[in-house]
Image (tube, rainbow, N blue to C red; front, side):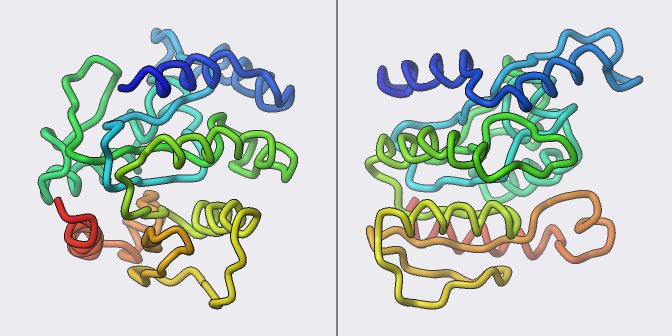
Length: 226
């Protein structure tokens, strides 16, 4: 990663701007899930990861309580991440079909993965002031990724909040609504693609299948030209 990103990530990891989230992370890391009872939780805000020359950005809303908050990496160590990385490997974006911990050898091709919110909120429901406080970090990630062409938003909440950040900077006249596989041109030349979240609920009910996400990611790669 570039020096800029390393500096940003250090700031994110030390961030305590939202007391409710800081306290919730602490609570999770003490009251561990049964299957992770002997593990040491990351228990800090979770940064984005990937390439600083990324052409594709994949965003979620927030780290999972016993996924990213435990492992220290977004979409790592939970069922949503398991599904996502099988797909990323299938379309040759990642070198392996799993993401388990920080030193598992994972590498991404021209891709950066992050969350709008860097801390897990209680019941997965962030407050507006928390989203606003954290949006500065996401804006910096967008600014630092100079080669970025495509943003894939996993889930309606991540999609809507990404759009909200764009609307603060640009006038968007087009009506942009969340619809799986629908793509929109953003005012800065990037393409935003909506994708159903790879949550167990969506996967188990076949709202999102491997074929659907593979096709979407192939399209994103084609637009991003890598």
